[in-house]
Each structure stands twice: as structure tokens, then as C-alpha cells.
Length: 193
Image 1 (cartoon, one colour):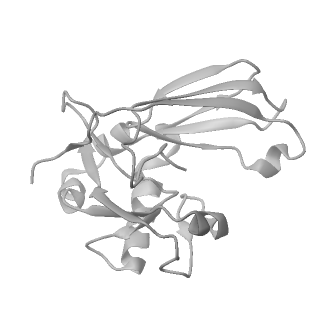
Image 2 (spheres, helix red, strand yellow):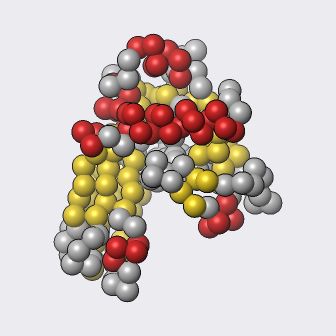
């Protein structure tokens, strides 16, 4: 699970991301999307108040991402706290999803998540799994797109996260696609503290 470019030390996450499938296996090639806005909306007020001022620490280590094993929630299981190429970034967990500030969303990239600044590593992992399992990757909060050749999928990257079928499902078969992200200077819309 991930959001494109979220947690980057150099770039703002794009608002628009797209994928254009040139060649896809006949089975098992899916992309699954989960709504961060709907997940936030479905939280009770006490939990929203509990997490509203939390800060996410993301790791931009390529070594960490290559060595990592991920669990069902997208949490990286990793015994090493720091890698030589680590660049850590911090951002609020909860932000507004757009300039209208009508809905809130998460600014959380499971692929780069290290911990919450306010919690130790173990408690951060527990809270991360709770948020993912109870609110984000629920069956009623995800949609699956099964790819056909020449499909085009355009989505709001700041409102969704996504993942693909495990490569083992379609191993030894071609999966060729183009990906385009529209860069932006539009900042993340932080909540006022």
C-alpha cells in the first residue's frame, strides 16, 4: 500500500496520478484503491480527537524499502531503525484533502511509514495497524480495478492509497504500463492547531 510520492523529502505528493496499461496478464493483475477520506469520516469523534495532532515520520531509504517485508496492512517489518541512506520527513497525520477544506484525509504512506513522532516504535506500529485494519483497508472502503490492455486509470492521489496484486500471482507474465503524475506546487493543507 502506498500514496505516490507521499513522504518525499524533495517533492509534494501529486494531486493527480494515472496509470495506462499497455499489456496485462489475463488474470491476477489488479490495483486496489482505498479511500482515505471515507476512512477518516468513519472514525468516531473520540478517535479523531486522539490522532488529530499526530505527526508521521516517513523514511525515504531505498535500502530499507528493498530489504523490507510488509505485512497485510502494508506495515514494513524491519529490525533496523536507521539506514545509511535514511532521510526522514515529518508531516501531520491528518490534513485537508483539498483547498476547499471540506473533508479531511490522511497524509500517510505505508510504504515509507517509520513511526509516529509522539509514540515509540512499537506503539506506533500498533496504532498504524489499528488505523489500517479498522478504518482504511476494510472491504466497504476499497475498490478493485481489474486491468485490461489499454485501460487508463486517473485518480486523486491525495485522497486515496493503492496497491497492486502480488507479483507472484502473475509471475512470468508481462505487466507493462506507463505511469504519469502531475507535479504540483499546491501545498498540503494542514489543520490549524
